[in-house]
Length: 326
Image (cartoon, rainbow, N blue to C red; front, side, top):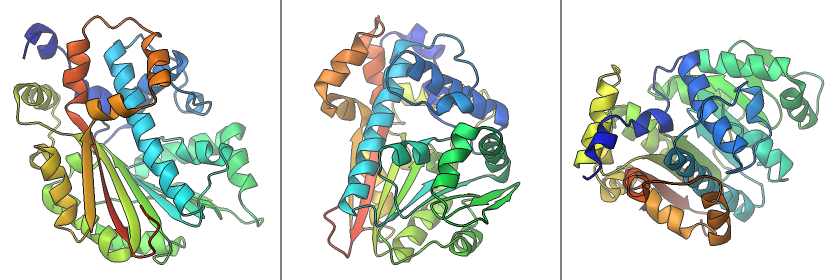
């Protein structure tokens, strides 16, 4: 790896991932990075300001471009699934954090039958507090709810179209019980999304989660964004930098290659799996918009961007009993 001096002081994982035992402080940090990228014009998100109050300090251009590729890539797959199902589907965002997808989908008239979010209770409590105290967040939730009664407590929110619940993704029986309590429908086409979540679980725990999804839904898609190619020097430096912060990537052995990412799903009863590294995704995005965002900030070292994007991937797995063509 060239630019080794830059690499040793650079911790891409910290910018891209939330920790499994995430604190409100690190969630705020993550969303400051998102807010900075949106403030520079990489993409529009009018709701992130209600979760990250300030724009924060300038971030490296390669970080902003990495976030852009992540957001565009995941959203492309998510929106395509909902359109193929003609909105007659449900979405489960696993480890959702302070994600704003519910509001984006409502604004685009792409609301699924119901949108679920799951995260640790401390994270959920923070998000629910923000929704309760900020009308631009609460109003769309109320608008999509048909009755006077809306369930709201410290660790759960349940409306007709939006549900947030606190749960540990490693406890499958509890997760399944809570989701079904809030009207999860196993018969509906279902999209599951996880972004830098499975990598913080042991391979056994993530396999259990992925298998539960395959066994619960007959027509489904699972989108997983996280690290890849972690056995090379760049990947090892990422791991070492995290270890210095007392953070272990418990599932890193599944992040060795695109094939190992796909295998996790194929071994857990998913019918098909595909994976691309984020450099490939970046090259496949609409080139007029890529040209636009590349004008936003000068990038000194394109090689560092390439190395960074080659160490993240999107993997998607499908089961398609209803022949949606997912």
